[in-house]
Amino acid sequence: MTIKRREFVVGAGVLGVASVTGGSIAPQPASAQHAMPMGKKEAAQASPSAQTATSAQPQKRTYTFLNPDEAAWVEAAVNHMIPADELTAGGVDLGVAYFIDQQLAGGFGQGGKMFMQGPWHPGTPQQGWQVRLPPAEAYRAAIPAINAYCTKTYGKDFASITEDQRDEVLNGLSTDKVDSGPLPAGLFLDLLYQNVMEGFFSDPAYGGNRDKAAWKMIGYSGATGNFVDLIETTYNKPYTEEPQSIADLS
Image 1 (tube, one colour):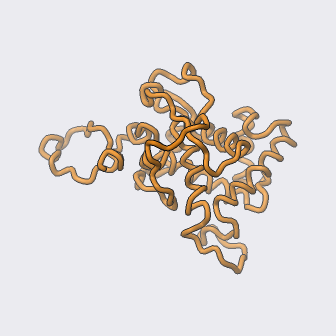
Image 2 (cartoon, rainbow, N blue to C red):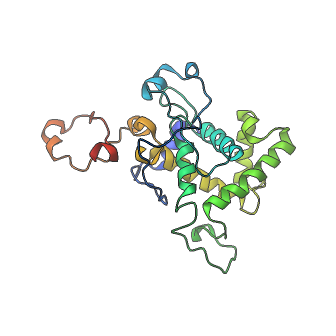
Image 3 (spheres, rainbow, N blue to C red):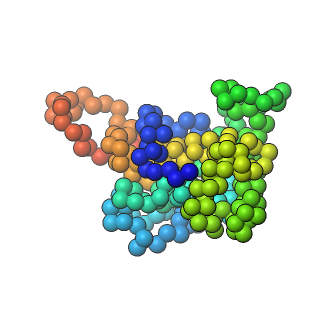
């Protein structure tokens, strides 16, 4: 399941990129403690354009929910879905893995806005989340099962296999060929894809979309709420102003 950049943007629908659908974690203060590296990619591996898009060194942040094995899995998945190229840095360096961790550690991960009571009967795709596991427990249950499948099939866990093999695993999740524990594989893949999109396009205050790279890539203005002063000067012209985040307006 090779997800090209253009396909990822189209899948996100661009609409509502400033919001975090389903997320509930509060923006992280700039003074938050940083400990775990957000990526292992050397700076020399990034293209010049990608380095320009995120010129400062990636922040090092402590994961709140993910344990080391889970963090390695999520980082591998995130960088596979958002690889570094001429448009942006890779997903981990953009903070997407950290965003997912923070969401899983908060109300979203605990299913705070989900109906989590039985009865538990198989549902249709149109009925939404129909399992008893909240998102955080879904990640915790699915990742070891997927790693076990990878070890049995390839002799290595998901974080250590090749990109082509990761394609096979993700394709296998989409068709329920790959075991994801008590969670239907297709449902876990949908959850992962949703969270990666949210981390890529959400306001940087939530930990992802570092340096507003995704917004700059698609020409999105961000949290700007009033364009009245720009109507006369920018009418029928490209909008070239820097996007604004919640932090810029506070």
